[in-house]
Image (tube, rainbow, N blue to C red; front, top):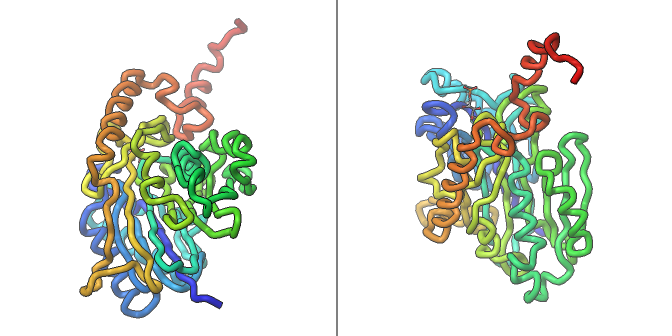
Length: 373
Ligand code: F6R
Ligand code: MG
């Protein structure tokens, strides 16, 4: 059997500098130190540590498959050590996403998010990793639809014979914890009917229909459903495979030429205009946002992220580019428009979705004063 390579992006909010806005250097350093040790001891082949706002993101490439207990334990132990550091620095909300105390074989259901993809490497395998902060798990629904199903975004759907036959989407119902596979173009309307409601239905995987080649995988946890209460938005990550019979990197990035709305932002309770940013701007500020997304491009080569002679992984910071200035501008404009509305919908999410609400207390307080109308 051909040798397989696994890409794992495991992320966690372990605490932030000055509120919920950015992972500071001492925390990133712990990620770096832990993963370097893991590379030395052969648990992973190589890695890249970065942040999406207040989320510490561990990108690891290895040969152990998805949901591997050793890889998940490595991530868990890294987040635990980072939490200790965050606690000692009195960083804000230290250990926020570590919802359980003891590790039990997987980070799934324990707070951290994981996007993982096992692939048989092609001749050359370009990969894009996206990670968002102040956004919910459904934040990738819209771009994944555009990338893999919308011919007005992805020219290849129309003019590359290798893409004829379309793509299959796995959609997760996060409320009832069940999933369904929907095929495009035939079932495009059914797909949109579901994933147009990103709070309930999230795209978890995409395959090329003609040969079931895996091409996208996203983290799809719903923290509030794990914890039973609001504990922050999920701030998802997503791995997308590109080129040679799959959408080109440029087609994968095209949906981000404009901003679009995601659930999240302040207190996880507002619609926010997504802002694609380079790593240097991966920090949420205005009204704890606007929701930000970073995008990293790299090659997977012989079980590793392709790297320079000194071992440094070759990573392209995809949104650090003037081509996304318009989207950033739109995001600011729309942010200002929404903020002008204060706590009136649709700036604020509806009460069912916002999860972080005082409505029950308000109703309780006023219950005796309500009269038949
Ligand atoms: C949203 C987020 C922030 C916090 C907000 C209040 O995901 O992380 O917007 O919800 O800063 O935080 P607390 O309640 O910790 O003061
Ligand atoms: Mg976050």
